[in-house]
Image 1 (cartoon, rainbow over the protein chains, first blue to last red):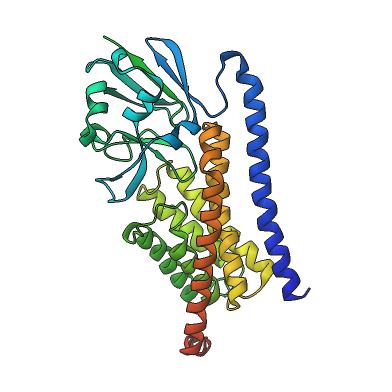
Image 2: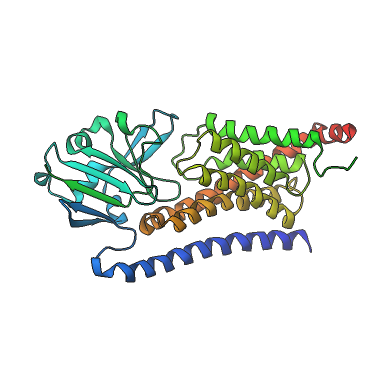
Length: 166
Length: 181
């Protein structure tokens, strides 16, 4: 087999792999759509519950309208880029529904982790409570808050937000 | 005495390359907000390793060793298994690419092997996210951008590795290795 043919095969392999990934994702989206149609959550949406009631579905499209922010994590000095949780919540909720003591729980069933924050902590810009879009394309909750400033404390693959008023 | 597949000298070289990957991952920070940008140095090291030890499995061994080291050091955001598999697959992907393409001294081969090796890492990360049921929409949002990042930076890293191999050849490193045998 000539070198040119080998290189061509290599390029085809890369293109096929990219096609397979995109195809499977499209298929996953379609399957999830049919499964979740009853609860009006689109695939990939993160449900937002207010006092136990589903009030919104956080959709990827919403990020396009939000301002991107950056923080340098204390642990590795790595730059994390994403969107403030504060901005995300106010896209779907009226600020009047939230008081400084309101408990906000950001959870991931995948990584079996959650973070509990108050609205006051989320609102304070210096805390930089934000969603970073991870390298594998899922949402990761990161912050400068002491209780949420290292990898072990971050919430990877976020798939649920619960808000409880006192 | 039975001859082993890798000589002790080659194993030491490969272990050093594995350590170099982990050190580079920890110490080198590029101010790029793009997925897979670490592939620039990552794939360069793997390609150099595969060129310096021209045996099937050399890149896989570097990937596995660096994966074990990185897992113990707690690198990566998605746990030890994700780290171990993704590091290992970089090596396995590179080995498979070189099995098809030939020697990495050819810059096109090095670049393409870099793309395939680095894309194998992406496949592990994406596969793990798919298996664990991470939210699909957010995956799709960053998916194409991430794939392009992995392909481009893998190619750049591969070419840099190929250039390093050519420089080593020019400097007489391979002739030195031949003498050592």
